[in-house]
Image (cartoon, rainbow, N blue to C red; front, side, top):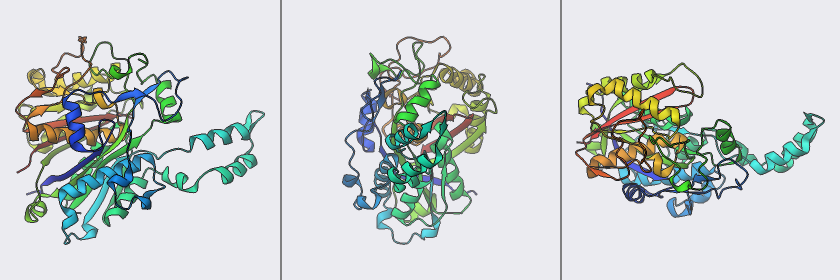
Length: 427
């Protein structure tokens, strides 16, 4: 018999709230966290808004916050989310966990860029169509902060969490774009199944609301440009959708081997029973238009979980709000669920909190846990104009009471990365 993997703790810091319950209540109310961009002056950009984490104080969440003073913005979110998850799991009161059997596995993005100084260096070192390398080096030594340079490495969030909790087991980070934290959680579950560890701190963190992040997505024409009605700009599955809304945040879960959690009396929030992964092998910025890769990911997760489509009560959709993604995901769900596709409800919380990129999957998995706990499904807001190519049950505009025991969570990333998790009620 394979080792079972359960979830015993969860935490989040995101645009809707700095903890799980605040976030959940905001989602069920259909609240929008989208506002004018306050992290830099985006007035000359095609997109002037984002879903930002506001009023966050690391010191209010983490006792030794000074230890992480040089951490990137997304890392500070992760530290707060991890603290919530760790305390809920009860591992802070358990002194018999071998630190070499505790791992950290995250999907987290690059750290905060030193945008202002980097731009200054480029402007002052560029001459006659080339970069004056001597001038560049001179300015770099004067201006760039060595801590910020180190914190740009994508594995730094893992390093901070490992140090914070004394985790001496595997310390791994993946950066597979929008699928990163779903992949991290799925592969962390594999570590527990294979008896490499007893518990893993897993999830994701990202913050791309900076000059280069917004510029890059604008150049890809991936962001919504509804500057005059930004609060309702994220419109997954709606015919009038024009792109996603960039968000930021972190969500962290404590994964644990079932018997280990049971013997120490931990409350089991949910059980991870299935994981699937695939690649489109198509284009680096577009999905396979037929949805074959996404469908493969879902089928693999169902097979791993040993359940059928009829056993799924809710699908947490990737649902970005781009023209292509929403139709492709719809095709993939139809391919996998067949006649059941129009009967299984699915929704996208990105309509409210924006796209958290590497942190999206972990945040969406937490909403699946809460849906099972409270027997209610979060809505897809701003869905008022049906798209003939998106004709499934997306739970439009209002939360819905429902029987929920088993959930599927999908995330698909640039490069054709597809990942699916299936969870069920813990026992």
